[in-house]
Length: 176
Image 1 (cartoon, rainbow, N blue to C red):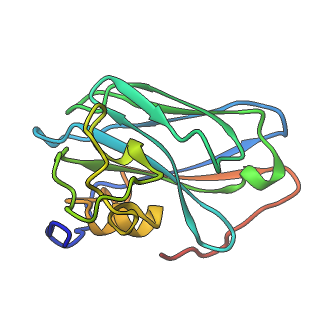
Image 2 (image 1 turned 30 degrees about the horizontal axis):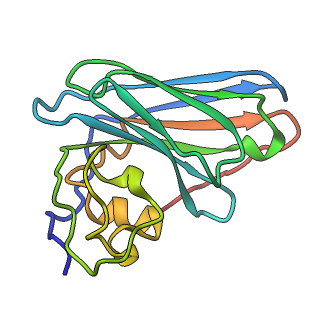
Image 3 (image 1 turned 180 degrees about the vertical axis):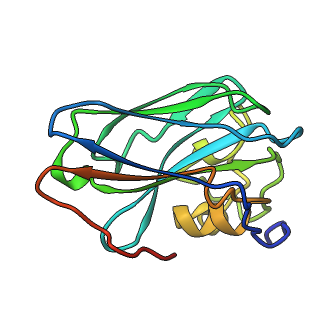
C-alpha cells in the first residue's frame, strides 16, 4: 500500500516564459518557490505526445539528474529551499527539445510507500542513501504518475517554459 498525500493543488503564482533557441545552443531555466518547509524541486519535460518525463530533481543543495531515458544533456544546479534558485540547463538543443518544461516543489518524505521486497529501478525517487529494497516498482513508476500523485503541491507552474527551437513551433494550446 502506498502512502496517501493530499490531492495536487494548483499554485496561482505562475510565470510563463517563451524562449527561442537554435539547435546546439544551451538553455537555462530557473525556478524558485516560497514555501518554508519545501526542500525539493522536480523538473519535467512534456513533449508533443503530452507524456511527462522526469529530467531530475534537486533535494536541498544536491542534484539528481536522471541518468537514463533522457535525450538531452541536462544539469541541475542551485538550491531547492525557500526563496532560492534552482536552474535546469539543457545543452546541445535539438528539434525534439521543443517542449513545455515544468518545475514542481515538494516537501521531502522518506516514506513514499511500502511494498514487496523487489528492488526498484528508480532509486533516485527516494531519499539518497535510503535502502530501496522494500519498495516495489509500483510505488515509484511510472515516473510522471507517481510524482504527480504524491506531489503535495505543484506550482502549476512555478515556471512553464515553452521552448521553441527554430523549425518546430508548438504547442498552440497545451493542457495536462
